[in-house]
Image (cartoon, rainbow, N blue to C red; front, side):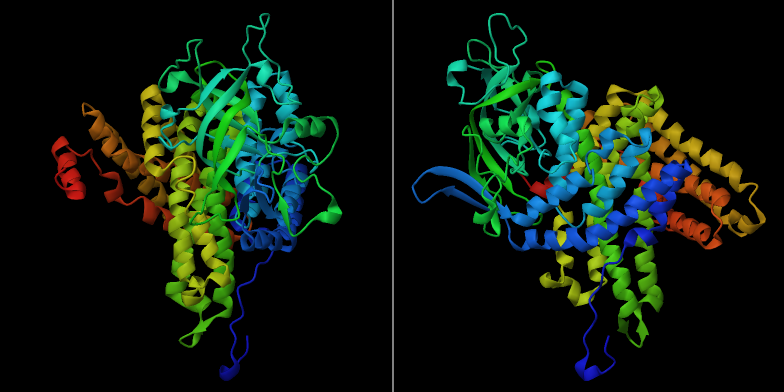
Length: 640
């Protein structure tokens, strides 16, 4: 930057290949991927990919943010076309996702049960710069759903395309659940599914259809209104609907819901894309293309796009309201088991939500630290000012903790998918998935706001690019279940499997106890850190006792009282597991890291995280009494 004060211009923050300097991610991968050859392969690919993100993905993502999607409902000849136009860069980003195996790696499984760690490390670099990560999340969830529940028809029709590395074959998936009657409360779903009438089929449609000899009843026609459909430009989708009885009636509530696969694009194009490696969505003459291209100009005629949503953030992502009228759908899973079936999908999307949360923080941190190295205030560079350093360090510590929590969940998810998960680990994973989603999302919004502040007024300027990070991050505590919804999900998991909490706590405590033995006999190089390590162990053990007190306080209370503490309990459990993983990693550092500075940094990170998240007051919460619940109601709503 110029030293001439009259002609001073602040150098903007710049991106560098942040994987090369990502101490935490590299160590986590090395801890899990012990095979030298496998680690070298992953390390080299991540380094290369991070550079591609900077050079290719970032510029295309900026084009998508600048030229937002638009909906053309009626053409010049008064025909209803419902054409969603996006910038051509949107297509290029989809191609990058396919080529890089951002979905495929999870199913090719090049390093077995550890492949999810490899896959999500690439998503960690991709997702904060482009909201294409949203359809990728649903695509991954759809692939997992079909892998587990799909028959031969769906494996060919959907799975092979969802996991393809060929951009001409690769498709993305939507997840249509939300309706006007309720968001997360899918039990109120009003969409219906009637047995498919062959006479009403659109030309070119070729789902296996019902007949007198076919008792499986696989094909239906779906009708209803979907209030939020993200990534409406996706080629396929999975949705919930109520199967109608012969008299037209349906079963109310969750037991009446069944999961269905639907094609979003016109049937003839689907068939063509399956039989030839043609481009099913952007099928038009290359010589006749403007900078905006029709993302779904061959949408299925049974789908009407009634509105394109105008959102706080993620504006490059087409999100719509849809009217479905006799849309052919193919049943997935058993009748009346729609929610457990589609849970296979949203469990994966919650993992994506979590990695996006830490990825946004990482991107903001990369920019904030670069800015601090080149910004001078009050006579000294920001990176030499203690308060600024500590502010950034606290954010980094929370980022470190969340990364450890997510990668442990990914490790368990990989074991489940390859058949190596124990029954006890399964109980831990069931609790971890809602916990990491709610925990990382809330920390993301807090941290990105803090980091925006580190730029001063320049961080508030829209053309700096920094506000986009904060705006986009705000979707993460909302999508795939708000914090309250997920906290209640944790309570449901505990009720369904009462011993899962014991398994969860025992799992975390075993990590702490194992680390304790390492700390008791450190090498001479680490002996100076031994007192701090022992202090961290004791702090975690004290928190375990406090959590036990919180749990004991739930005995004999009402449902309303239990729910009053759901958030506090969820955050306590997530903080405790995260602390155990940081302590475990510090012990690993004592043994495997040669650089004392790295070991010291890990110790500092664990201390900063635990000082924030293991405060005694956070673990001393007890359920509200019925009288207190009534009082809080009056506080908020007055007298109704």
